[in-house]
Structures are given as structure tokens and as C-alpha cells.
Image (cartoon, rainbow, N blue to C red; front, side, top):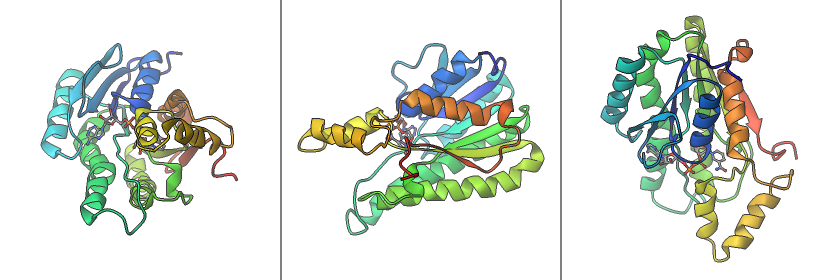
Length: 244
Ligand code: NAI
């Protein structure tokens, strides 16, 4: 498919996991893809990687300025860089909460602020924010993480209302348990990593973890002209977790 031919896309956290799959799907459909990541080792083929930590506004600004110099505009922004913390409301320090909000919520805000002047020069521009099924359904020991992912959904609707008149659509995806380095690290931290991984597979009603490319395709749909009338929504890609 070439429905993204000539379109310029930016993906944060685009060097691993879901972000990398999003970058690869958009690239395969013809987009010019730039990724921002704090780790730019071995980027996906045909993709330009910019080293930027989304907790640092000056690094995000510098990357977007470079992309602007090269492309003159951005048509698609995918906010995806995120981190997790496993714990109940009593676990960890408030510094953990602050770290999660800094990456998962303010990281999106910083990138959107830096990208908006370029998105305004784009055509039928779209922002897609990666949230999580934890925003809507309780998952044990994910209190701070769930709070940040809920904030992303609220932000998505509010920004959609603010930006739709400028022909910038804002939507979100909420994946279930996706097979990425993020989940591998969680499994490896368990006493029995193989058993933990089997639990991750089993908690999906479909019986297996979500393939990151499935999320990539969902993001591509929301960013495509076929979603022209889709504004301020959340697309669920969770193997049926929320339905049960
Ligand atoms: P991952 O840990 O496998 O990859 C994350 C990427 O983001 C890495 O390339 C990392 O270097 C980059 N990154 C992290 N912090 C950054 C920062 N401060 N600045 C710039 N880059 C940074 O994660 P995964 O699983 O691909 O998750 C991506 C997004 O999807 C996150 O927002 C996560 O919360 C969300 N998500 C993941 C699910 C899963 O089951 N894996 C489920 C639902 C949502």
C-alpha cells in the first residue's frame, strides 16, 4: 500500500517495540519517517533516527527543528515513548510518579508543542497518542502507569477539540499486552520469566500477546485519510481484554 506516499511522519520511542513497528508500517506504506528516541542504535531500515529524550524540551526542539529544516512540515506525529512502574499506590516514592508523568504525559506535551508549527504546515495532519488498556480497566500493581495512560486519553479528547478546526486530528490507541522489549523486561524481572511470559499470553482472551505490527496498523489507520471523520477517539487493540 502507498497511501502514505509523500507524507512526513514522526514517531517518538520509534527505535524499539511498538514505536519501531509503527515506523516500519508507515515506511512500508510510503511515508518519510523520522523517529525520536533516547537510544538510536540500529534504526529500522529507511528511517531517520534523531537522538532525543522526551523529558528534555531542548533535545525535542532540536530534533523537530532538524526535521523541519529537512522536510518543511510534518503530516503525522505518533507519541509513543513511554515507561512503566510496577507497584500499588503504597509502593515506590513520589519520584517514581514524577518520572512516569515526565515521560508518559509531559513527554507527549513537549513533542506536540514542538511539532505543532510543522503540523500546521502539513496536509490533513494527524496526531496519534499511544495510551494503554490500563487507562480503562484495572490491572493490578499498575497504579501510576494507569494514571498516566488515562491522562493521555483525556488529553487526546481535549486536544482533538482544540485542534480539529485547524484540520489536525487527534486520536489514541489503547493496546493490551504487546510483545515488546518492555514486556520482556517485565518477564525477566520475575522469579520464573517463562511462567511470567505464559501469564502475559494467557491474560489476552485471544491467547497470545498482541503483535506490535497490529498496533502499527491501527496507528496507520488513524493517521490515514480513511480516518478523516475519526476525531478524539480511542482505538482498542487488546485481544478482547476490555470486552471480558
Ligand atoms: P519499549 O520499552 O519496548 O520501547 C520504548 C521505546 O521508547 C524505546 O526505544 C525507548 O528507548 C524509548 N524511550 C523510552 N523512554 C524515552 C524517553 N524518555 N525519550 C525518548 N525515547 C524513550 O516499549 P513498548 O512496549 O514498545 O511501549 C511503547 C508504548 O506503548 C509506551 O507508551 C507503552 O506505555 C505503551 N504500551 C505498551 C504495551 C505493551 O504491552 N508493551 C501495552 C500498552 C501500551
